[in-house]
Image (cartoon, rainbow, N blue to C red; front, side, top):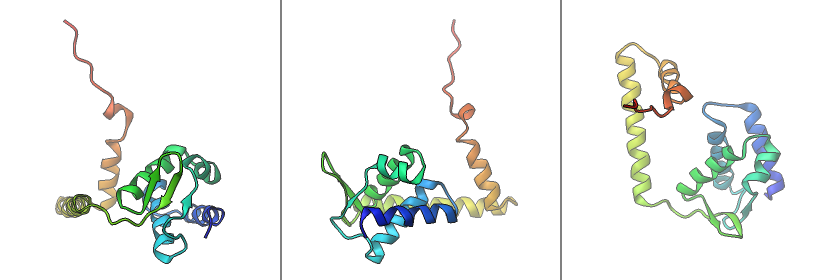
Length: 143
C-alpha cells in the first residue's frame, strides 16, 4: 500500500465512525494496516498536514495520532526525512504505563457501576473535564 491507498482507507474508517476521538480512529486504522502488512516497515507515511488535508481534519488531530503511534513503537520520525513505519517494540516503561492505565479504566468503570452509573455516564462526566471553563487557569486574588 502506498500513501495514496492510505487516504481512502482512513477516510472510509472515519465515515464509519466508532467510539473515541478521530485521532484514535486514525491510530487504530494505521496500526491495523501495519499488522495486516498493507504498510511495510520502512514505508514513508504522509506528513501530518498532507493527511489532515486529505481527510478534512485538523493537523493537530493527525499529530496526536502520529505521536501515539510513535509512543507505541509503530512509527518513527527522522528529522528532515519524514515519518516511517518502524515497528520497533515499545519500551517496557511504555508497556507498563498502558497496562496501568487499562487497569485504572477498568477500576473506574467498575466503581462507577457500583454507584449505579454506566460507561456513558462516566464518559459524559469525563467530558466535562475537557471544557474550557473547567481547565481555565484560576487567577489569584490581587491584594
